[in-house]
Length: 277
Image (cartoon, rainbow, N blue to C red; front, side, top):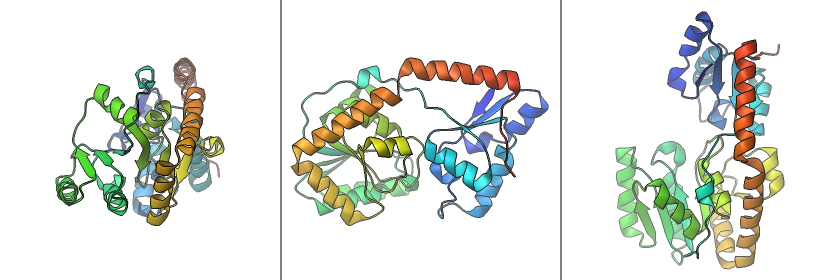
């Protein structure tokens, strides 16, 4: 079975089919399937003309599965990713910081976190962001020099990164498109509330009630962060809900078994990617 999630590799699906190899395409961002206005119709057409060459489509959440079927008539299978979660389960004393983790690229919108720090000077903000985009990174670093409560850090080894989660009061995401963010999983296993600026999550996460959505409004984001910072019992409530959901959703043994069964089926049947007319 050949599997790919990077767009630049999707041309290989045609080759796999001609070679008699089963193939799987894994949707890695909601914006690829929900016809986001931030992604051009031409790009969607380019992607899905090629994705249809895959035998099977794998989605990361219910929202992606629903949008893929609604907008493109394509069936898919939800499969959770496998993560190393054992070392995440550490809960030392918090230092009250508000954490942002992600690549310094436009899709992550790190400048919104900068504005959040400016609006709440009484709190400490930590941004861990590998500097991929030189211009954007320079701009964020320049801002941090005049925002004393904002601390920008470049690359951090994973074993050290986990301590940033554990010491924080909450984790904030400002990205406009994700699939199933690793920051969500890591925050959940660290018992930290998760505030999203605008991301749409699947129904099971919404039902669990541990993710706060600011619905693309900066003032709402500011208010939610301030509320959590001043209400310790509420932070703990969200943290416990997050941890309970993480233990239920990201069970390592179950995920491994699900993937084994999935790939065995795809390899035997050639997949089940059907486009509904």
